[in-house]
Image 1 (cartoon, rainbow, N blue to C red):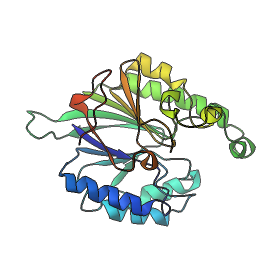
Image 2 (image 1 turned 45 degrees about the horizontal axis):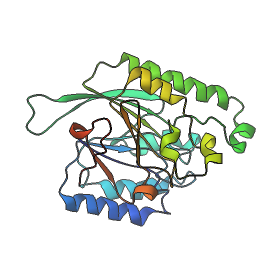
Image 3 (image 1 turned 30 degrees about the horizontal axis):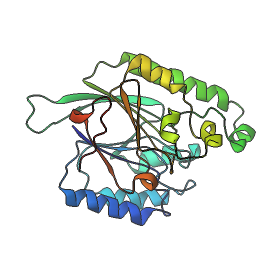
Image 4 (image 1 turned 90 degrees about the vertical axis):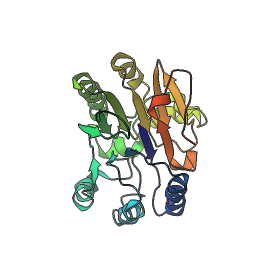
Length: 245
């Protein structure tokens, strides 16, 4: 299965780079079976910018599109995004199972996806001032991800989130800010549940890929990669980083 993934377009800020990245992917002739979005596709709640993002993908991305929300898709805007862009399946602390058609395969591949914004070990000052229950919410999300993974009975399991679930993919950022960019306690969930793949964004200057035990974790943020990340799941082996070319 080939998965295409990206996030952190922050449209309009990196919209032109996103357009180029989609065109470059199409020029490669790669046809992904899933397109995953790790959040922050628009900047600071600018919902109308999602129209531009969606139109860029229309007609070029023919596979299912699944997204989680980033911190720039403000909570009060999320229902509007779900209603306006129904061809994108938004997972907001939710999971879904999907049958993916693999060319040449004898049967569809069943894929389970957990989607969440994720958690910060140290909530931001704004979050602490305006969201008094944020610490509890972040802890509950950790438990939620584990619960959803434990109930999945699919061929392939994916965790799709915005904040980093490990500090390994934050290397390149200032270590002082690791705890306000993610929470490495998710590593315990990853080790116990062993999903096949974990994707996140949020970190614009971190590391593209790391391993938590035997599980590959990809930082798919567009500012870091400069392109749509293409992952061939058949070639994901511990100790081996495999992007499709």
